[in-house]
Image (tube, rainbow, N blue to C red; front, side, top):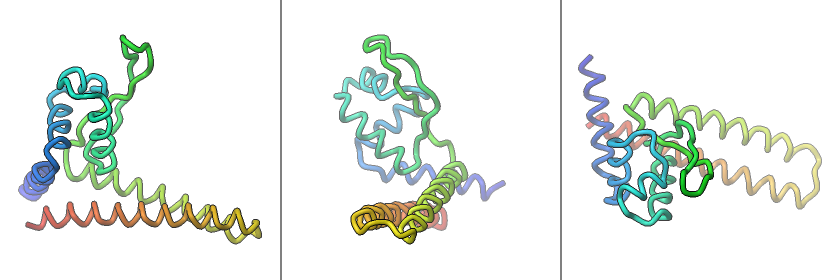
Length: 152
């Protein structure tokens, strides 16, 4: 039980190391879960593009997740809703899911690469494979950073 408490405290310390604006948006989503970027922009009076960029960054760090959508009463468009990832285990599960997805996509592209396609197509596939390798490497760094914080 104490190890779970320690992991969750370590997870919270990750949040404390975020850049100020990212941390602010994270805290707003903690206080007002299931909010859209427009909701947070209205509450904080920050420009929408700044809020949306911070939300994307938090999502890419597996600190928030999409939980649904709702119709924006002003624009009449569907807006994605987000909530904070509640603990390190949930975050690790999300990172592992992304690893699997990236690896599967990379393997599909590698099969296509060796299937006798044109030189141009091979170049495009190679570029996509390199992009996925970069994403996998980024996930490894995120996961390693979380493990390092937990170990402290």
